[in-house]
Image (cartoon, rainbow, N blue to C red; front, side):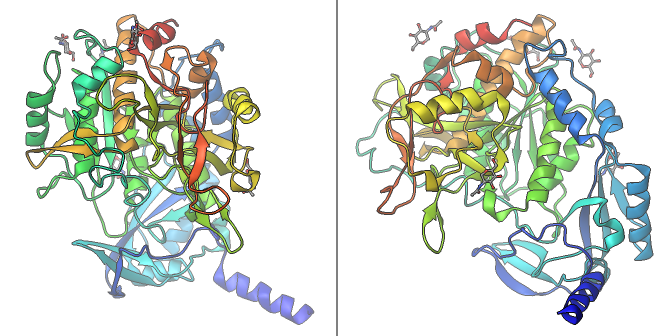
Length: 557
Ligand SMILES: *[C@@H]1O[C@H](CO)[C@@H](O)[C@H](O)[C@H]1NC(C)=O
Ligand SMILES: *[C@@H]1O[C@H](CO)[C@@H](O)[C@H](O)[C@H]1NC(C)=O
Ligand SMILES: *[C@@H]1O[C@H](CO)[C@@H](O)[C@H](O)[C@H]1NC(C)=O
Ligand SMILES: *[C@@H]1O[C@H](CO)[C@@H](O)[C@H](O)[C@H]1NC(C)=O
Ligand SMILES: *[C@@H]1O[C@H](CO)[C@@H](O)[C@H](O)[C@H]1NC(C)=O
């Protein structure tokens, strides 16, 4: 036994330390293997350096986001955030010594100095990260380099790094969110008008003058698939659908590579609806920044936010991954990045997903399957609804696809404990306890219509577009309108909304109380997840925005 223990120890030393042993190592089925990466080929890896003062960051975020705190709205600049979290000299030195020891010189850092992005050959990468073997994978005309096996790092740096990006994770998202695009569903046998900007504006009580006026207001959508919005589609959409209110017809700024080619439905949807809800507000598109075969597009966006002093106040993102496919180290670090954004007064809105409660088939039984970043305690997550009567702008009920549930990784944040406990106590019919973790962060926080949208893509108006990808930019546009009114009064932006949202206890929102979303298709739950109820619920959150009432509730202080 002793000898065996010794051997294992030696192996441990040779192999180094794992940073993300719980990261799933698998190739998503739509990516095809395209051979080993040659030793001389160049690649780029991202090193997430351990930050300082993460606890303080968390406390500060709490203070600036809690309307009852003296510090409410006292946001920091990126430079101030940087001085708080930047890695210690010891950390920087350890990581640089390690990289230089492998001949790696070509690195770029960010303003907060907590990420390093370095180029090296595949051969160097495989020696730097024992255990790795880099391969190329193809999907359509996209190619990627990823390791087919786990990586480790030298023990001298294992305490100084959170994770290494560009090694294991495939780009998130095409599967988790964006499923509900398959044209008319069973419930829509008859043709009806569908959702357009005027439907949204009528339902959420936006008048013609509820548009942006403030000089420095801005909002953004971030996109990570190989999808692009087309300026001509946006212009066409606005000319057909956005009548009777003032709006912009062009995106203010595209950050990243905006390529030619077919427009993506998702990309068109995001831009068209944030710009017709948050009308006349300057809009940015973050798109697949600077593609390299080893980059992780989502992570790349996080780096950009830490490298740009001035970014929009509201960001909406329609992508997600199964929580169980990501390492805890990675998700914890992404949460810190969200905290950094919140501390700067930025609101991060994520789509809750299009698979209801989701389903993970385990050997013995099924459990629901939460999605990340929807399950992050540091973002505002948006679910979906549909009209009770699809022929009229009436009240909303749950859209069965609306993502929602409980995180298995993140504990329930204080701001939602009362709301979630009340739901769990009062719910008429809950799924069996074994399907979800009632102590986890519960989502979504809010919702909006997510069914039967009209979108213009490749110059053609297309109906029946559905998904929480639609509701998220709508809520984003509404928060931007509220920011706008706040700016005109000299108040700061809303920043991380949840602590304040949960204190409103539903004021300013239309409560959604009917119908259930999808769950596992098994005998125990028979395809059903959670059901909407009065007040907060894990299907539609607190409900959908009634703009004038929500504005009234969020315009003081
Ligand atoms: C961050 O911005 C600086 C200044 O523009 C640039 O030199 C650097 O390469 C950027 N970092 C990354 C990782 O792109
Ligand atoms: C907003 O819309 C609802 C339902 O459409 C309506 O009952 C209400 O009176 C409207 N106005 C305000 C200010 O809430
Ligand atoms: C549109 O927004 C700009 C600020 O970006 C403002 O100056 C202008 O007055 C707004 N237009 C209308 C019609 O409100
Ligand atoms: C708008 O932004 C510019 C540049 O960041 C700044 O100089 C100006 O003071 C801002 N204006 C307002 C009204 O906040
Ligand atoms: C339930 O969630 C908590 C965090 O809130 C976590 O510590 C625990 O491991 C989770 N349980 C399961 C079975 O996933």
